[in-house]
Length: 125
Image (cartoon, rainbow, N blue to C red; front, side, top):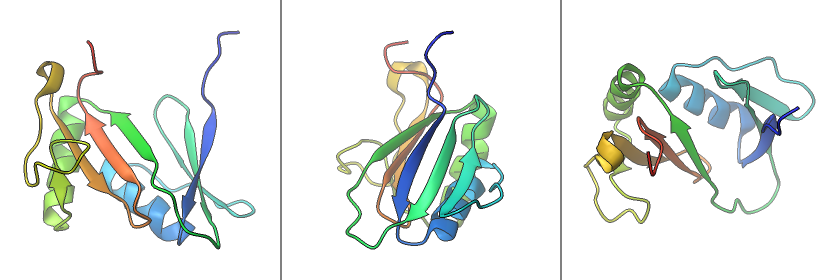
């Protein structure tokens, strides 16, 4: 069997809020909570299991490869919600998207402060 990422735990201040935020932006569903985890599954079977932690959240980066149509829809949801976004991971180009590798990409923060990214082309593609 080839190695595949199955799931990862995403620390959050409020697991339900962070899971709902991601699901809403990406047009996904929030799964049934189990134990301390609130899951959001992606199309390739990877699950992000959100868990509230009683500690300072250290920013992590999560990038999602989406189709052009999915990008357009997600970007519109970001704009409609008034979420600040950037064209770069250093947050130096606010209010812009990038066109790296011939695609489109944008960075934004989730409620816990994690850096989220949506891209239409993998880097180096």
